[in-house]
Each structure stands twice: as C-alpha cells, then as structure tokens.
Length: 382
Image (spheres, rainbow, N blue to C red):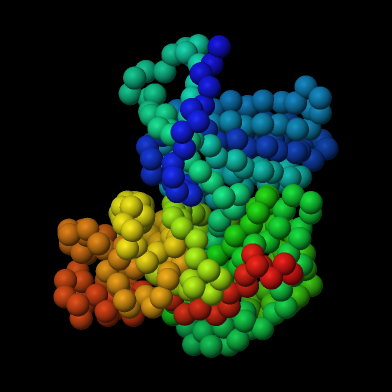
C-alpha cells in the first residue's frame, strides 16, 4: 500500500522548479487519422535524442486502450531545471517539429514527485533517484505564464500604443477556466506579457487567440516584430509562440492586502550566456527568505526564465524605492557580488555589482520595466 501524502503543507502560497525533487512530465496527444506510422517514426527519432539530454532518466510511450488515436508520453527527470533547459531550447524546437504534422492536439503537464511505492522495477541507481518533494505546497488555483518577444528598434512607442489600445476579451473561457489577469511590460524593444489563469492555461490561450480584438492587435504589430510570423499558418504560429514562451519557475505570496494597496512591477535581469537558470535560482532563494520577514513589502513575486532572459514580477506595498535592495532580490550580503557574475551588466546599462545606494538606485531604475497595460479581473467580475 502506498504512503499517503502528509497533511502538512507550506504556510505560504508557493511553486518552485528549484526544490531539487524528481520531475514527471506527461504529454497527452491526439493524432490525426492515418498519422500513426509517421508519429511512431518521429517518436523513435525524438526518443533517441532526448535520452542523451543531461538529467533525463526514462520515458514511456503509451496508447489508449479505448481510443487508439490517443497517446501518452511520460518522462522522468532528475529535477525540473534540466528539463526546462531542454524544453525551452532551440534543439527541442527542432526535435519535436516532425511531430506537429501528426498531432491534432497536445497537452503538457509537469509534476514534482511527492511519494512513490517501493516496487520500482528495475530499481533506479542511487545516482539517478533524485529527491522527492519534501512537503506538499499550498497553491491558489492560479496558473502563471508569460510570453516575450522583441520588436524592431525605433518601433517601441508605436508597439506600446497598439498593445495598450485593445478591448479585453471575455474573461470566462468555460465552466472551469477564467482569465484572471494580464500584465504587459516593455524594456527597450523587449515585450513581456504575463498571464494569470484559473483553470486550464492552454484552453485560455486558445480562447484569447480566437478573439477578433486580439487577432487584430497581433496582426497590427506583425510588421514591427524582429522575428517574422504568420498567424494564419499554424506551423509558423506554433514555432513563434514556442520560442516566445517564458515559463514561471518560482512563485511565492505571503499575505493579502486591501484592494488598491498593492502595485505591480516587473524587473528585467538579462543574464550572461548560460547563467539564466542560476540567476533565477538566486532570486528565488532570496524571495523565499524575504517571505519570512514580517517587514517584507512584497505581497508576491513570480520569476519567469527562459535561456538567459529572467523577469521577476513583483506585487509591492507602497513605493518600490522604499526598500530597493529587497525589491531587487539583493537582500543577502553577498548577492551583489554573485549577481555581478551572472548578470549581463552591459545589456542593462549598469556598471558591475550594485554596492552603494546610488548603484542600487540606478540598478532599480534600469531593471524596472515600463508598464503598458494591466488588466485585472480578480475584483471587477468582468
């Protein structure tokens, strides 16, 4: 008999890719009629490539006994970071490309392993077992995701005007899914759209993409994008949004305030090549420590990371300049020095580690992204 999940949960709302626990990834697929042979050939090629990725343990291919067009791919990873590094890479985009013509619909789910039975056969070597998630985390029923892309230099003002001028789509997607909040920021020519959804993220994204007002905005900004896309071509749209994905790797929220008390900001941390995950981990650790401080002005923080792009979305009581060190996630004594080794200072326009009050103020000014629009449906009910 398997062990029951313990009743003890963390005292704060939290999600994290950095707890070191083993990861189970589930990919649900619905194939086009007649595509089975092509799919199996593509899977074999993909399976051999994935097997060599660091952190990958095993995978299984399963076919439904009720509907042969439905398939399931499960994979196990030593922890979340190596999987995220792989799934967000250009190599992954190229590896899964042959699957797209076979598949009518897909859904990807990622889970940390909390408990397991002792009947694993064959047993995993000790070096590959990894850790189980220590305690069950407390969630809030919200899925967080972001998209990022760049526009042509010189077009920033026009793009901001277009992106701020659209009418919000209907919040209710279906009986189980609702759009909660969309916040859009810019930093130079980089656009970041953070999305909060109650229910099914993919259902919400599909719902939004079909709305005429949203499609009109997307078409209007197409001429200004650095990466060409054709939203009328499913393949082109899929590749664009795959590359634009900016997953949430850490979230923590510690208390609630009265409506209007909290202001939202986004901080941009461009990392040196290969340092994005380490930078996100540093910020996540500091946010967890800050959550234990009763004087902490942060209501919540969400860290998004892909490759060397790190964005930290913070909801703050009061002015962010009242405690810029904590707002930036630099409270730890050595964090400035560590940050200087991970951060691409030139891309941000700062000089090395922020060690003085003047340095910190400049860092805050340079990293604070421009808020273009913030559509919050949590209290309006629209």
